[in-house]
Amino acid sequence: MITVTNGIDTIDIDKKYLQKIDNGFLIKPEFDYWMISLIIVMEDDVITKIIKTLPYGERILDNFNNLSQNSNRIMLASDEFSKFKRLYENMRNKDDLKKKVVIEAASQILAYQYYQGKYLEDNQETLMDEIFEFEMPNIYNYKEYKEEIFKRTNEILKKEYL
Image (cartoon, rainbow, N blue to C red):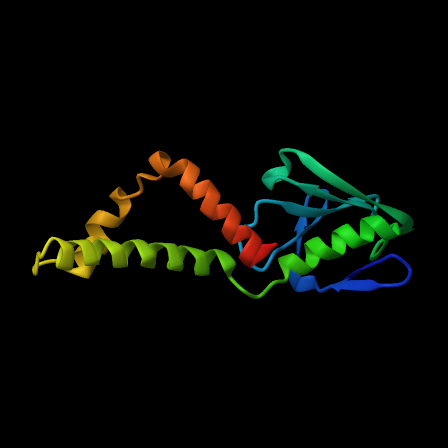
């Protein structure tokens, strides 16, 4: 276990969320679709900092410097601790938001495609399973609706996420 603190508040990172890598530990998120990595950097068995990177360390996005010299405790300044705490808590979110969104989007499209074929076009041979298998991959003409998609996306962001 590694402890991260600002001297007031504390986060204990369980070993099951730590993956040993060459220069320290990768903090594993709950779900594998995360687009950032948090890496605990060690030099001579002492934790020097936590870095926030794009996957595979392609680009460092942020540094959280350890104010103490310890092998299992990280002392961060208050503002850095607040940023790290928010990221770490988001990584521990148990809701698979991506799965929910994909299911909702695909369901909306499938329902419309089925309705169009079966009822609007009066094609009684329309089968939901066939639409799912053969049509769903081909119906994403999303680029022609870019402006409307961005507008609706901003509405969803304000309502659901921000």
